[in-house]
Image (spheres, one colour):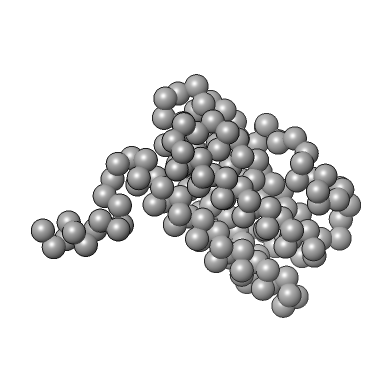
Length: 165
């Protein structure tokens, strides 16, 4: 059975998760050899900044400091997903592994944020979580598409051709 979170606890977890995701995507972009994958990781990192801003606007705690300082603070290198990315950097398939890790993280965020949105009493904060769930689903779809490209799978834009032939 899940644990219930207060509004501020949920926002704190979301802020930490978005910062970790932003750092992950920035690191993945910095080591990606594939230009298209690098652009996807850069785009995702920038969108995570938007999520951070949205959550920060409602958060009352002070342990993160101001938004700009927090965004520019060093990555949590003890974060399990970040550690897996560091390990993958030494392998030849860094884009593949980074995309696989990103898919798992985005899926987890969708589940957690959906639950937070359902449990929120404050309609303003609920709408923030609902919006971020939709955007995170968009991230998942983008990552999934890029993964198919990196893995040289049939891309969704080519599917009609294969179905008809």
